[in-house]
Every structure is written in C-alpha cells, then in structure tokens.
Length: 175
Image 1 (spheres, rainbow, N blue to C red):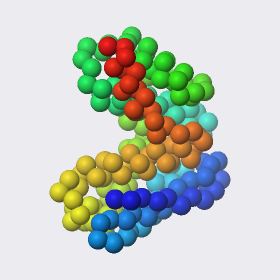
Image 2 (cartoon, rainbow, N blue to C red):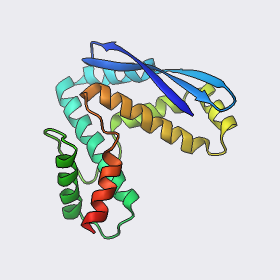
Image 3 (cartoon, rainbow, N blue to C red):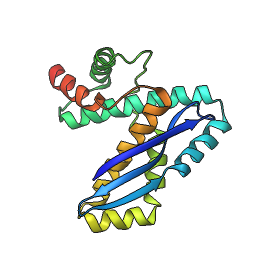
C-alpha cells in the first residue's frame, strides 16, 4: 500500500492537519480516506478542556508509547522502569525532542485510539483491506500508526518516525 496525505490549516488545533489519505493498492486500485471525523473528534476533545493541557498530555503519550513500543520490539527481557527511564532519556536526548517527558506505562496515545476507531468504522476501507490482504488487521494497524504519526507531526511540528527504531537500538545497547 502506498499512502499520500494532503494537509490544510486547522485553526482550532493550531496546526496543519492531514485532510485525507490517498491509498494506492496493488492492481492500480486507489482509494481516498477522509480524515475529517478524526479532526472533528480531536477538536471536540480539545474544546472540552484546555487545548494546551491536552496537547501536552498527548505529546507525552505519543512519545512514551513509541519508546515503549521500541523497547518491546527490541525483545530484551527483564527491563524495569528504571532501565526504561534510562533508555528513554538517552533516546529523547539523541532525537532532540525538546522538553519531552516519558511515562513508562503508556501504551497508546489518544490520537492513535481515535485514528484506529475512525478507520475501523470506514466500511469501504475495511472491505478493501480484507480483499487486498490476508492480514487486513495488520494492515489496519500499520495504517493507523502511519495516520497517527502524521497527526502527531502536524500537531507538534516534530517527526517521531525514527523513535521506535532509535529506541530498539538503545535498548539493545543497554542490555
């Protein structure tokens, strides 16, 4: 699957936001996924509280969950919170994430949960994934991760795409 995202200025979230995804599947099939429902859900969440507080929590969750994923994917056993914190501090320093905080128990950001929920409800997308792959749920998870990463990059003007791999390398180094 090849994916392209177009963006536009979303004033309520104070960022450029991915508007729609263009998916290109094998066999020349292309499909567009509208991300408006994801944006609307995020705006509603932000409006319930303080946008700055929500963004701060969301950033911590996104960074922490990607670091925790990298640690898990490294396959290193017996990593306690102290070692996780040491790995996270090194990764945050090496990736130049300014004022980043790490929480060793975060597994998923709210943006990732919202993206997954919205994509899962898209019947056409689910049918396409089911037809094009015997691993439709795996494709959905990868697509969710891609979209959530694009949303995070938009919300915070920072790129977390190398965070999992950097963490895996650091986890191996610490073990």
